Image 1: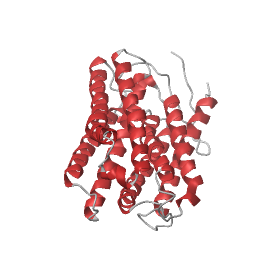
Image 2: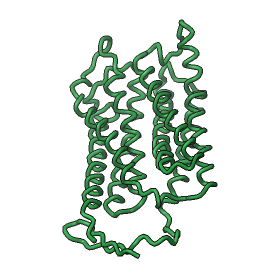
Image 3: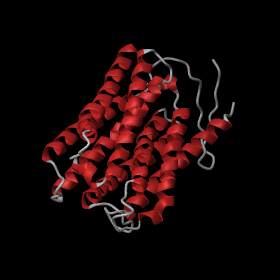
Image 4: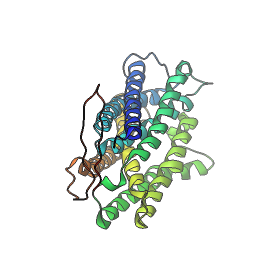
Length: 307
């Protein structure tokens, strides 16, 4: 029978993804990478980092548009791919609003509050919508061996962020006399990123790992959401460090740049490998019904025949 509810949900998700792609492009055009219309109240180092984030945001926009097309085609990879731009946006948008130094530096980014708020709402909304739209029966590869690999990936993500990225910074912060240049230059931005990394990403990765170990039905979807986050965010951090190095930023550090580049290559390549099976033909042999697609004014009509 005709599933109008599924059609409406898919149409809404695709439209929201196209809107996110457009919003990310607009923000990049207005940002420091291109026109500089938005003048963030950032220091020189954070401005350099903002240029890098704008560049990666264009990649996120392209992925959002691709996910929208796949959702419209009712491809199983569509909602899963949506996690990548959605998590990137939800993670980055608060930094546009909360990170700037409003009391000490010139700028006008507060005039674009509604744009950044809209991006944040879209990012969070799309994470929830993609979660609801994912068909867990079609997530591949399946099996205990695949879930064990995902567990190690989740633990690796949590360990790198908590121990490699933040442990030295937290120890420095708790010393009472912080010397970390990122903290000293802009404490608010630095601590905001710490809250997001240690308060959201690390717990999400650990929860997904525990859930996979216990065979929870939601855990594989959660793992793909975490994988979506590290597909672009580590790459954006690496791009920041490269931009700072090229710009001869006084806070640039060659060792950190190399570490972040290696981490970005590992995480992004891992995301590609973990997402790739979703684009392979489904050979599970499980009857799913017969899908007939009828084109009428660009809409897909699904006809399900029960077996």
